[in-house]
Image 1 (cartoon, helix red, strand yellow):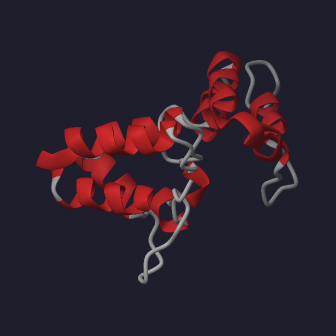
Image 2 (cartoon, rainbow, N blue to C red):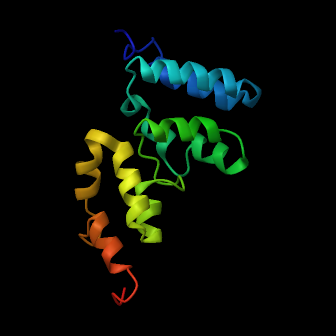
Image 3 (cartoon, one colour):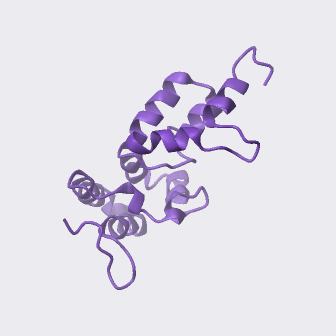
Length: 139
């Protein structure tokens, strides 16, 4: 399929749909339906540019302002790594919730192992960080 082809500006269909939904929140329901169709057809959330996933990016800003929630939730459901999202792996670690962490990693599917084994600046994986923050662990 041609779901990963880029236009002359370097954008892929999924990114274009997302940008349209954030630019015109009244179109979000139609945009979410379009994005859902693209994702079901095989578009990859990995194709979403890094700035869209950043906590200072346009999607996080829209989410915090109350628009873009359906777009962010859809991307998360299809395995996007959105560190700022309340259902992300990072949020699960911060809450030290094994159930939330398991659910978040399941959504990441094939990338779950890479995310779980990534280390932070202190050399700790997500599981180390969660264990260090567990009640009674002294962290």
